[in-house]
Amino acid sequence: MTLKQMFDPSAVAVVGASATEGKIGYEAMANATQFDRPVYPVNPSGEGTLFGEAFVPSVGDIDDDVDLALCCVPGPATPDVIEECGEAGIGAAVIYAGGFAEAGEDGERLQRAVVEAAEEYGISVLGPNTSGFVVPRTNLLCSFASGAEKLPAGNTAVVAQSGGVAHALAFQSRRQGRGVSAMVGLGNRANVGFTELIEHFDGDEGTDAIVLHVEGTDDGRALLEACRESETPVIAYKVGQSDVGDFAESHTGALTGDHELYIAGFAQYGVPTVDATDDLLDAAAALGGSPEPDGPNVGVVTAQAGPGIIITDRIQRGGGQLPELTAETRSRVDELLPGVTYTGNPVDTGRPMPAFGDVVTAVAEDDNTDIVLVYELFEQAMGFPVDALDGLAERVDKPVLFATDGIEEDMAEDMAALADAGVPVFETPERAGDAAAVLARYAELQGHTEGLEGVAHD
Image (cartoon, rainbow, N blue to C red; front, side, top):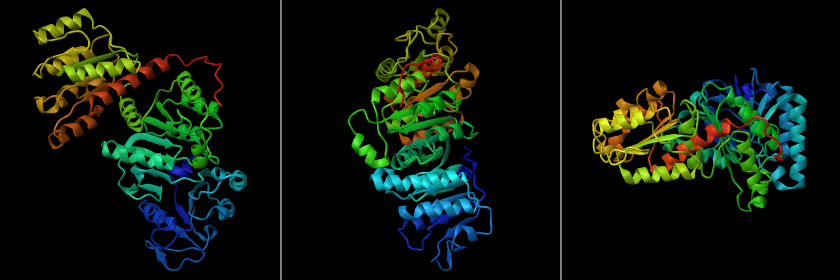
């Protein structure tokens, strides 16, 4: 299944478009018209124009090649709409309505009718029971949510079982100054699910990391195989550690399954898991766009001992390792920082100083380190970190992370420069340590994914 017609359509039809503010057909049309290609409002009772486009009575009346239909009609009308789309040659559709498999036997029958129509005509269907998707770099806003037009472009693809979680992750990413390459809410996964989206975004030049929010799936094996085959790093947040099965099933029709089984399966197939949405985005920032680590060994440099202790603790608790630095590196650090408080790993300079950047370079070049994490309070940075970190990851071919805190307006310019230089920035020592630990786990898991069998993943 190719999803090009969904994520790169030549034209879009909004079926059930409405001139009444507050209705999904109105909000979906308002967002869709931000796209720079034709968008057609479809409604047999529509009169005049909507956002400058004339209403058409049906998709078959559109005198254009339409690739994507946004279905804003009630659930019972949806199978007929999908059939009309098929007859009109439309290859992809988003179904926003609920009342399908998540709603019991009648809803399951309705969803089967949608799937049958989609399969007959070869239509890729996102949903039903979804809030849609957004591709910020092209302003393809196939969501009815307010604020979708303000999401910045980034390099992380968000694939969430819940549309609400998908939007929450995208908005969190905006607040962090990162953005997303795409945001997708799966809903009931009629025929587009995790597997198809992982395969699509693995081939997307604008995506450097894929994050998954997983409630449950009826085809865990296919999901895990897609993760293993992906050349783009995948990180997962599996919810349902406590008993939320009934709630999840009523939400997206998902059976959450045994939590530990999922975690073990992801690990076997090379996917690190996290336990919070912030951790998911931080891990994606650490993995996306940086060199992949060759191993789990983290070299830490800190100008303040207390945050360094927190970072060290979080790295080791999360599965990372702090190796002993080579004698050559320790000798170099001693030369740079006579009287330094600690020259092992982490290196604690005890204070910020002009040689701080040289210390970071020495630790980054150490053969025993695979990942580098630097902490320094920003107001004491004395021109660091931009000059010292610019290009360091490329020179040493290792991920380099930076953590800091300070007055927001004082940090803004340098933080933007670091982001442009491909250095992920974290605002707390805990988040930085956790992100480094995910990198370490990823490196270990990627080295142990061949020939793994024996876990029932469904």
